Image (cartoon, rainbow, N blue to C red; front, side, top):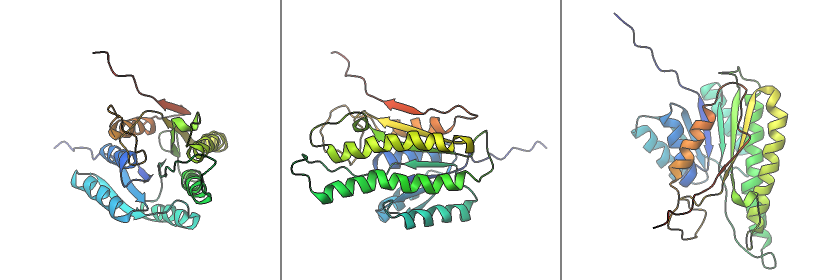
Length: 245
């Protein structure tokens, strides 16, 4: 009697900011591809809902409350993932906040909150994940893949966006440096610049032709499926103008 092979999971993924928008879409896409997904975010109820929806669709997911600004929380979550699953194959650094304000009137609180969440939080998660990944056995030519979700604001500034742009420019530098430092450990790092207007809670701008967040989810799934030494160092997701009538 022929034996049907059991599908092998591609690995374990930790997605931050997974309670809505891009994070939820990335978590769902990775789960659909067979990953065991840990959905993390400050809003425990929202990440629990996302993980529940993934399980209802036949995927494997869990939820964990996490404030990426707190390095002790980040370290504890990554340690728990290692204890539960034995490894971490993918980190998607997606958690972030968006605080607008002209520099002349921008408050200390808004500045710190944005930099702490978008840049320090990404650093906390990347450091903890890279430390774990560097000691893992390689699978398909790599030990892990870190995807930092960036923005067009990381390539250019704009009025009222000083804090957000500063955090995203910083994330670009973090990604470039981290990539060089962990390459010899077979850990890949991709800076995903989402310059298109995507369905998300971060922006209140009204744009008729927003890209579905699922587009980003599928893009991340394709990125982490790359095997061997090849790595996409930076990928810009722009948006075509509307077709002429």
